[in-house]
Image (cartoon, rainbow, N blue to C red):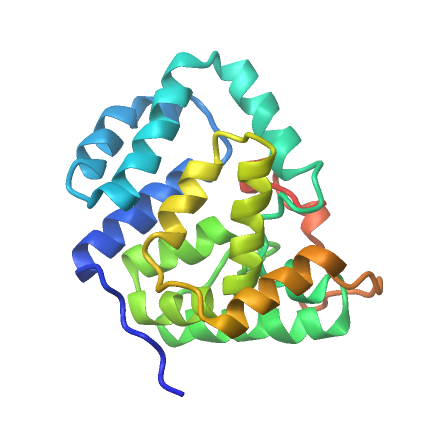
Length: 218
């Protein structure tokens, strides 16, 4: 079955993904300095993706930075379902996850992108930046293949009242409506959670060893 095509023009797709990539990074002074530019970018987008981005920007601008950073760590580093690593939802820390990570790496390499050592390729912000700056088609395929995990992340953030729910909602707003089989996959993931077999992810560094600015996994 052929993949559905994006409904947004490629330039709007790139703007949405680049904005979301920045907003899913660890919040710091440089992010706050960009909020004006990000608002200008959101104004170029349809309401279904621009409004959620503006909602998060409102929150970021009125929240003291120490509180914002503490909320980020609590949301993405300490909650099992607040995981920004897309393959974690389907595979947990199992051997199958290592193979899934390899596919991300191969997609990046075909586009001429080589990640820094120790940076896992399935981090949502990395995938979005890749799509915005290098290969929209490659990122589109990766996001669709991991749609169930992305939807579970969106639902978990929404249910916990996280401000970052709007950022992920903007990302899912660029994707097609869920098909029946995808809805079933989301329900299965929500019920069962990721597999728990603990194995190494060689040749990739364990997520726990990544810098805090990338958002750790549970």
